Length: 415
Image 1 (cartoon, one colour):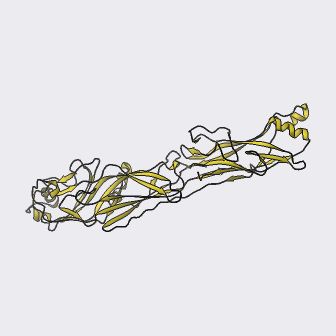
Image 2: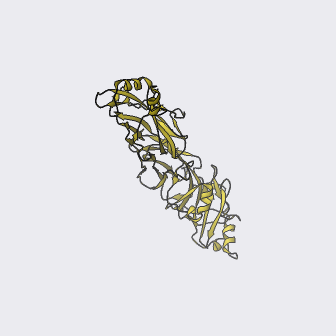
Image 3: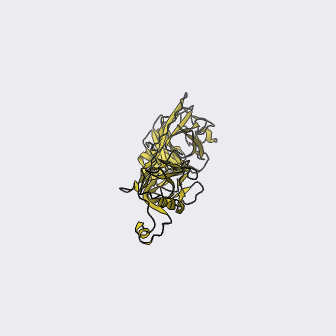
């Protein structure tokens, strides 16, 4: 008889934090988590957990559909002087040029030093412009508020974005302010030209939407990853609102916090840790015919749930080279036991090959890396234990009655 205590080693948890402090800077955390969902095994992506503010807080369904998220920052832009009527240079009026191309940020595991890349792009921009006096007064009166705001900017409402920006259909107003939000699908300057002299103007905050491309979490280790990306704010910088509208902060830092909470769980059925090795036809066939068995074996099934990389090896009570052995207590005679594993579909080796009766050895060679192509949830696998024909003949020739030994099979996510 062979006793098999099955030991499972796994690692769970992950977070990520980064923070940069500098003068005249605004810092914002962007957090995301990967936690495998048994009901959606093929959705192996991070879930953005950043608290939403600004436009997406008002229109969450729209942002969910377009996979964008928004933040509102307390950056105020004040005009340095009047905005002239019919100005010829967009930089002398209301303009917006934001970093719409993908920006790469390295995130680093806080313990192992492993690195991955997060990509981010700005996909929308908005604010609330504020005037010093009523918009009706600026355009000469005689019209309602909505018409006055349109007349101020050449008949074009801020609800409708100038090219290459695109409208979201959002716009609210009163006699002093106009709230707006535009999508920024491509790089370029989005500008409005005033038709009347505006003595001063301000943007009371900065809203922006962003999109994320996160790494494949199935290739990442459990743990904490941290990283950041920094944008300049002001004329000629990443967030450029022209030469007249100047910000009270010159830097925006996004601190990425990536949480990876992997699952690695192995379930052996009740009694599965006691493995009895028998001939293919059972012992009765040998007793009846006198024909020696060609092998002793047992296939022990298990269920595995895995979202992370892992490796496997064995530890032995009785050692035989690079594998384990079972021993007869009275004589001390021992024979080697071959141990191998078959893993379910969705789990492959480092070369992407299926794992079928892969030998498990004490030094872990050949089983240094198994990886999921998707979240594997309670799929069936098997451990195979076998004593070969030559060893079986030795066992029977000695007349010994029972061989036993402990083998510990290790699943280790610390790869």
